[in-house]
Image 1 (cartoon, helix red, strand yellow):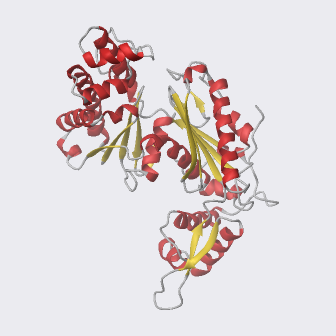
Image 2 (cartoon, rainbow, N blue to C red):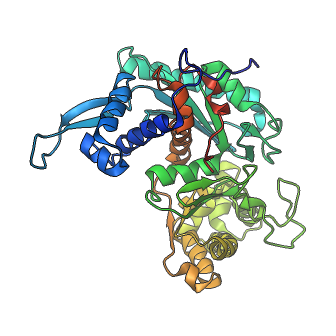
Image 3 (tube, rainbow, N blue to C red):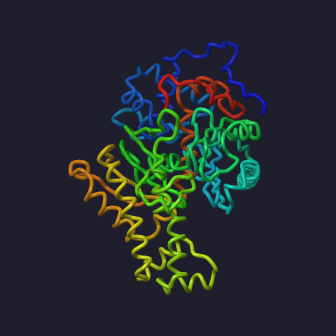
Length: 442
């Protein structure tokens, strides 16, 4: 792979001073978030003087990040001109990889999805084939966006990738992922940075889902949340103090391989026994549903097996919703196992909100009820006094949206903004990912 370079802001390699960039980032964030829409509002929220606000707005407008909007409401004098963030100045490419499918999308700089595709894949095919497929899908989406805008430029400002396994966030490399043979240590970030000449961030898919809910879903405005993905595998994303918590190496929240049983007969894909994922994940539901069908314990599943030749987790869900007793027992048992582990996490971490997402989360009220019952019964009363447990509102889009916001959050940190604000775009500067932050995004 070719080496990446860190961009400079111009002839003065020292760039803007930290205080200058901090004030630029503050003004930009106030407008981007919708907190302030006029210069007087920026001054009130930021504490910056009127002259400084005017200077920073002019700088951000000159480099194409802000633009004038309509007149705002008057507070007695001349009506102020509203300011708008130019979310259409560039695009972000995002991809969420699961065990059996991949979702890719293009968003604007405010995280709004402009176009998306979802296709089946097999993560076990390895990084060369899977990432090659993703690159083709990105190219297709960029072409579609270009056609829809009459050939307008679609500069790629950054790329966000969510992978279904542990990721060392600092390097963007998977680390011994249980369901991803051939991916260990693969330079995902470097490959895509070379291909699209843009900064790339790679994270675990569940962290991306948690970030999606935090920025654009049911957790918006919350400070302490726990996002739980119930799919083929099981994982969790933690948000503490309004920031994603990845841990020191990036593997915080890997609850799927926590031991919840001493049963030595069920071996997990990680090689251990008794893992939550091996007993309550989507693959576990499919396995147990297949056994029930073959043993004649579920006429509904036996009929599905006879027709399709296999049993999937969603077949068990449909059977349970149709009143199939065995399927109800399987879902209830899975919910109680998940809920029992979450009860420990709720008492330990004390979130205000637990969000249940992923494919298995769509199994209906039965699974959610079993999870809630275990959590409320086994957690500390103080920890559950105001706790909400709810389904994801973003559903299948959570990981995609979160991967885009991962890029957006990183690009607009003051340290990185300092390196691209003068040229007006981070496109062409993949080395931005290597710039250290004074206060790291956790």
